[in-house]
Amino acid sequence: MAEENALKPFYSVLVLAFVCSALVAGAAVGLRPLQETNQILDRQKNILYAAELFEEGKTMEEMFAPIETKIVELASGKFVPQGTIDPESYKQLKAALSDDTGRQLTREEDIAKIRYQEKYSLVYLVKEGQTIRQIILPVRGKGLWSTMYAYVALDSDLATIRGVSFYEHGETPGLGGEIENRQWQEQWQGKQLYDDSGRMALQFVKGKAAGEDPAISHQIDGLSGATLTTNGVNNLMEFWFGDHGFKPFFNQLKKENANG
Image 1 (tube, rainbow, N blue to C red):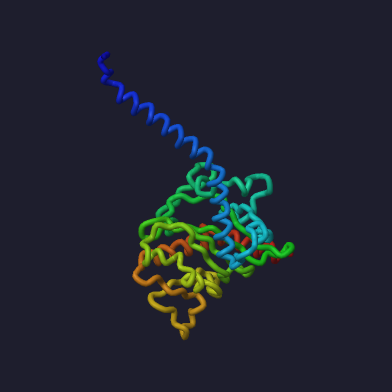
Image 2: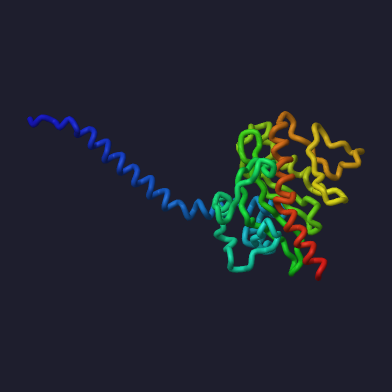
């Protein structure tokens, strides 16, 4: 009997590893279109949740029909001309890391602790004819353990919150993870972002927002036992609805509306 090659088991393992790698790679490539489709559907669902437009029994296409997707230059607040950037293929988080389409925030600016910010943002307009009824905006910021991602819907006055949907995070289940709790998110409805002078006034209070407090229209209950997560939510709202976020966009819309 011929002496067995000592390297034969090694070759067998190597061939098996190569075959398995090829199968995994093939599956990943084959499933990519399905994954991308599911990501789009999940994004649309959370946009609809924020705007209180999700209805059981309706298709996503039906529910999303009144929503127009556009891109805004954050610094100027102006819509990007059609054909400049495709909203359907624009990768906002990836853009934040590019020298051409993003910028590194200074320590003073970066209250949301995101480090890099995109120069252009997707915005979602709920329209009735040519009239904008709601605007849904993507926001993010650091919590205790993770970056929290959400959509915030505003009424046409650009100050009243219609709803919110936190859809991705890594906060502690039962504590900071309660940002996903629909009952807590419902408290946001009808709250005012700004005071009479236009300054950011939304605040998250410890315990329950007091009904007799004159500032009740700006107050949302904080998350019990999750102070750092609550602070993170407060900071991301202050950032994205301030001068370095969507405030220039709001000012531009008000200017356009005033000019007819």
